[in-house]
Length: 123
Image (cartoon, helix red, strand yellow):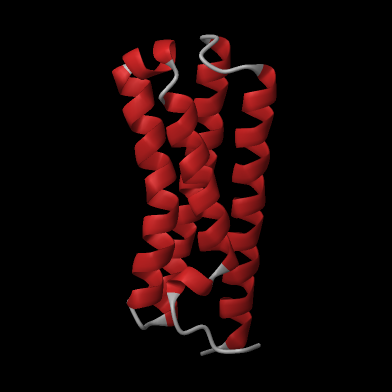
C-alpha cells in the first residue's frame, strides 16, 4: 500500500466529506432547518466523521489514529440514527433517507476496513 501523505487522500475521509455535504444540503430544507436541535446534532455528527479521521491522521500515532477512527465510525452511526428521526418527522423523503443511510454505511465500512488494516499492520 502506498503511504498516505495527507488525510485528504483517505477514501473514508472523502466519502465522509460527501456525507457531510449531503447532510448540510438536506438540513437546509425549510422544515428541517427550523428543528434546530436535530439539524445541529446531525450536522455535528457528520462533521465529526471527517474531523476525527483528519485529527487521527495528524496524531502521528497508529494507536491514537485507530481511536479517532472508532469515533468517526460511531459518528456514522449517529448520522444514520438521526436520519430515521428526520424521516419520521417527514423532514426528508424515503429516497433522501436511503441516500444518507447508504453513504453513512459506505463511509463506516471504509473506516472499519482502515481500522483493520492499521491493527494488522502492527505499526
